[in-house]
Image 1: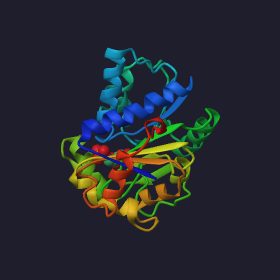
Image 2 (image 1 turned 60 degrees about the vertical axis):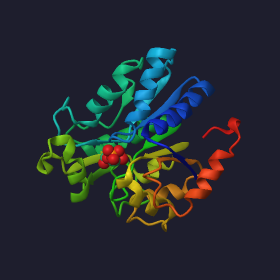
Image 3 (image 1 turned 90 degrees about the vertical axis):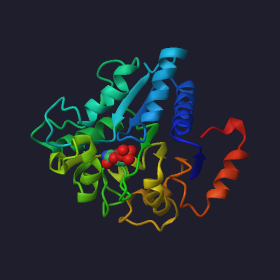
Amino acid sequence: MEVVILTDPAAVGVCVADAICRLFASKERVNLGLATGSSPLATYAELIRRHAEEGLSLKGMTAFMLDEYLGLPVGHPESYRTYLERSFVDLVDLPNDSLLGPDVATRRPDVACREYEEQIRAAGGIDLQLLGIGSDGHIGFNEPMSSLASRTRIKTLTEETRRDNARFFGGDVEAVPRHVITQGIGTLLEARHLVLIATGEKKAGCIQRALEGPIAAMVPATALQLHPHVTVVLDQAAAGQLALRGYHEETFRTKPDWQGL
Ligand code: GLP
């Protein structure tokens, strides 16, 4: 696991955008896993800027959703599909229908979960999966006590997550759906490269537990310790509680350029 500690969220966005651009330079078709929440916004903004100002093309990309709410009407402004369209996908040259996700409009969401797994597999797997982290240590919507071998499935959100996400629903916890579909932890561990982004002091505690704590279903993000290629990109504030902070900073400062993330 590589831990990169940068000055601020904008620098985090540039660093992760660099990694994505490197991937595009190395292969024609890229399967990119997209996360929601505020953490990846600086990365999306940087990719949008490069598209508008520097001619970056994302035509070769298929985008895969990490998770989605169940029970919101199609096109709801806070559905993750709408969020991703509004903050990234519609602002670059991604062909129509290139944003794939579980079908949450169906009456059989359990079947939709299996179909989504199949879609990921048929596309050849995800090259780079972006992740944020919840304050309770969740990745995607894999809440505490999620099986570390879990596949895409329906989950019930914790009260803590619904409170955290109420800010997107006018502060109303009751408006936040209780049920979601999320890629499972076992599914995520099959992506070839996992990039976890966290910024701000509020994330310092869960980042410390995820990176330095024992692997446990109670902190789902600890499962990242089992993956051979994980990059965690933090700002100073989110790295504030890491015991090995100095080591990570030294490692990154002395890293050869050609290595990439
Ligand atoms: C939601 C998403 C997660 C995300 C988390 C953190 O719960 N399902 O994928 O990591 O929010 O959000 P933020 O980046 O806004 O802190």
